Length: 185
Image 1: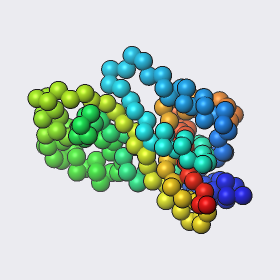
Image 2: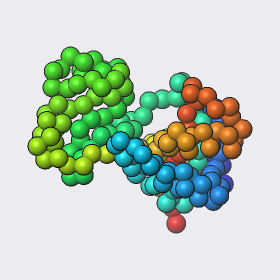
Image 3: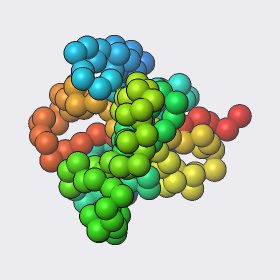
C-alpha cells in the first residue's frame, strides 16, 4: 500500500516515464554491477545508491529532461580526507557564477573544479575519487508512513540494466533514479 502511494506520487511528477518497485533480484544485480569499476582512472563511489539499497523499499524512476533538477549536486570529486575538489553544476545560476569567477575552473558545462582546493591537494597528494552522494527526494515526505528517503543516480551500466529489465529502449535521453525509503514502524 505504502509503495503504491509512493509510485503514484512519483508518476504524477513531470518528466516521469515509469516508476516501479525494485525486486530483491534487482537489488542483488545492482550491487554486483556497481561493485565492478575496474580500470577507472579516478574511482567512483556510489554512496547514494548504497544508502538507497539498505532502505526498506526501493523504486526505480525512469525520467526525461522534463523531470525537476536535483536539489543538490549528484556527483562530487573529493579527496580521501573529504575535501571537495569539484562538483556537478545543477542550475543556470550556478553556471553563471562559476563561469564568471576565476577561483573556479569549468571542466565542462556541467562540472566545476575549485582551484584553491585542487592546488592545495597537489601538495598533500591525497587520493581522489568521485562520489555520488545520497540526494534528498522531498516529494515522498508528503506520505505519512514514509521516512529516511534518499535517492541516487546509478552508474551507466546499472542504468542500462534497469532500462532493459523494465522494457525501455536504452536511450541517452532517458535516465534512471533509484529512490529508497523506510516505512515508519
